[in-house]
Amino acid sequence: MSKSGLVERESSQVATQSQHMNLIQIAIEKGSDIAQLERLMDLQDRYLANVAKSEFNAAMSEFQGALPVIEKGGVVDYTTNKGRTYYQYAKIEDIAHAIKPALKSAGLSYRFTQRQDQANITVTCIVTHVGGHSESSELASTPDFSGGKDPLKAIASAITYLRRYTLTGILGIVVGGEDDDATLATESQQDSGLYPDEEFNKNFKAWSQMILDNKKTVDSLHAFLSTKGIQLTEDQCSRLKQVGN
Image 1 (cartoon, rainbow, N blue to C red):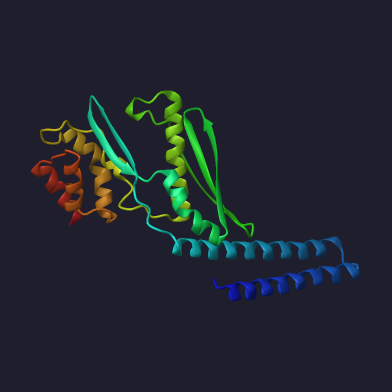
Image 2: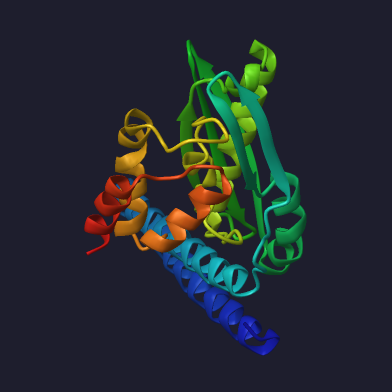
């Protein structure tokens, strides 16, 4: 929003708020009862809440219009007795650095809260506008023991993962390429041989959903899996093509 437009909007809001306050003052001077005063105060509160929400929505629109595409600078690469797991992802520190200018310009900020209940870790990302309105996104997960992490590192890894996805989710952040490679790069086959049907069946639902959601075509999915050393059988390819038809 231009500076002149912002000034005009703020002037209009001040004028409307002043009218509400004048009504309250007149009611007090006329000796209105408590119930009437409470209704007027409630009207004022609802007006201010609506203004704050409207400003938040405008700020989010401004923020998203200024967002760069964030590339994946992080790499996960480890091998277990089930095979190799490799994928790239956008690190939260890279995301935070990339969005900082756009957040500041739009008057937005964010913070995280977290709690742990038995085996589950819950992270909440709260986005707040300078006008006072806040909205939040929440996700939960168990500790991430992949790659043989110890308990503390497993908890820290899950918290980082949850922070990354709550932040990108609530702010509508786009990461370069699909950000579900971790699902695709499941611990799988050894470097040679065709993909076992048992492993294919485990992943078939997730891969089918990616095709149905137009996140990947059958060909791009097959090409991606090939880079991970996964060679599908003709029957497996046929099943994926049926999903795409």
